[in-house]
Amino acid sequence: MVGNRLFQVVESHSNELSINLARKLRTSERTPGYRAIPEEDLVKLGLQVYANLTDWLLTKTTSDIELQYSQLGEQRAKQGIALSQLIWALLMSKEQLWGLLQHEHFADRIFELYGEREFALMLDRFYDQALYFAARGYEQAVQKKAHAA
Image (cartoon, rainbow, N blue to C red; front, side):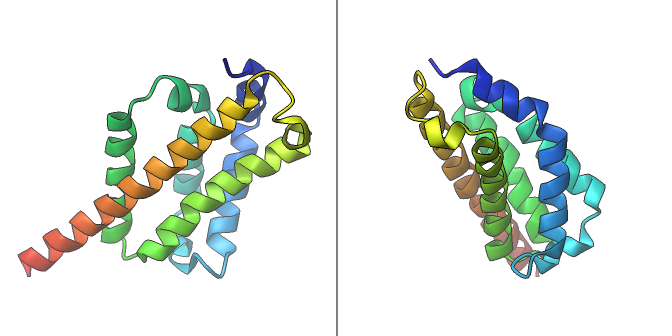
């Protein structure tokens, strides 16, 4: 099973990860639409994932991820944020996480430690699903708007 230390490191740094992600989203040339979203809202969203990573990776189902990220996609569409920016934001979230693990020297040893390869696979699976469902929620919101017009 996945080493608990990885989860503990991420969850103990969740606030820092969330704040850094929010700042990057609001300053990146690839996510200009996020400048209109209050930083504290972006921090809260990051905390939902980072502070509860164990739950997201070990207990949440595809349906849970679908619900959360379809709603996120729909919300970003209503805010007028481009789909490419939403996708980039999710990729930045994942990059923040890997950056922390590298800083904590997990990335160098990640496949040496007992089962952390499983952690990497689970993390990739989570982000792949989050991207898909966020994009789908976004597209559904755009379709609803087009039908309403």
